[in-house]
Image (cartoon, rainbow, N blue to C red; front, side):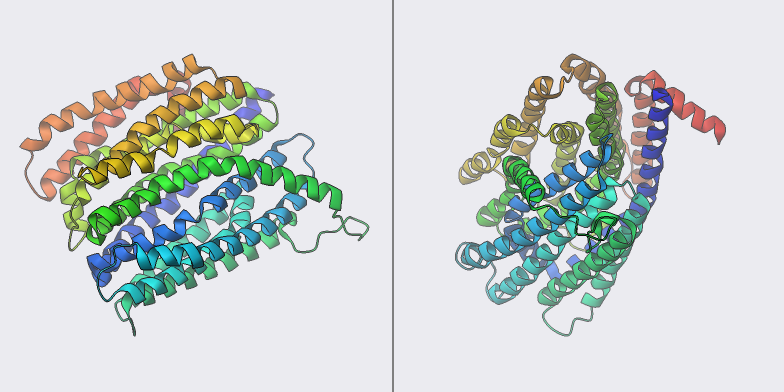
Length: 520
């Protein structure tokens, strides 16, 4: 019975993953083309300003990221419990909305004081563009607040594993951003300000769409919360206790969330301070490319994460561990198949994609993809850590290690090191944090470290090493242009798939794939 249930759950993961991949294939082309149009319309300096000023806003997302994880964890955990309560789901969602609204106000207050001061006195903004940068800050803040209040609705869709709706709304958002890119070409005013305003309008439209769907589909998302006899179901004591639990969880998760945000956007601000907006533009372009590639893995993890949390909540530790190991390996392999061809041909890809390639863009892009592969090994571990609810020691240790990104990068940039050092530091600390997570989860969740190293870590490193050495040797001998690009991609993908099948997959995974092929 348990085996059949696990098979059904794996089929649900596969179905949701494929649905999200179809969404992503469309968004891949839309996103890359949109970036090309926006960069061409704004120019390198204005595009760099938008990414740098957006980084100021994102730094204030530290608290919201912690609360977002708390919301997702509490909703999904409650759904996975054998004695799941509809009433408790309502309370979780209502408290989530209260928390997010409160935090939106706090973050706007901080950004309108500290953020404005930093923008106007410390940031490296080209002459004559400071007024536009201030408008971008205001619209970015409003966009951020709208997205923040949308988070409980997103969490509800993912917790209920309704990926079809998630996919459709995501496609709608991507097409809306494409429309913004075209409207930018006929902007009636300053293009940078116009772009920031239109992105804010898209966020508001998407927020309304999520709200309408969730209120129609999920009882806990509706405004009126009553018992069957029509009396209010709210209980002040229970609500207060739950609110304290969520805030406590978010408080400790704040350390990990802040370290990740400061690693990414703090690095952007350091690059701005030491290297200027042109290098910020290169970083912004590579983030867009990496985000598009990582979105394929994010789709897989979006489908997998609820299953990890629900299995842990139900006490099925053996199945939870199998999901974590499987998720880490397959996430890495998915990224590897996509990243290796890009890494081998990055200069060509950027020259075709962009009208004007910013300096350092190729190096940033390659290092960003390596960092994404490194982080993919930790993503399922993070989900398991959140599922346990016991995160104090974990966040102090791992979050503290990640916070070292900014001071180490600052010290290296101050000594005149190339801006690529920011990403090199992030990759090194990512690996250190991976082993710290393993050590902590052994005591927190009984994770078998030896099995992880054998089944996941050694296997992915060997597979990657076997897959990349022939492309490296053959790349200099391939012709320039599309012919060489297609040949290089074919070699990379063929070798990656071959070695993943021979060495990367386990026997049960091979059997499942063979069964699917025979059925087709």
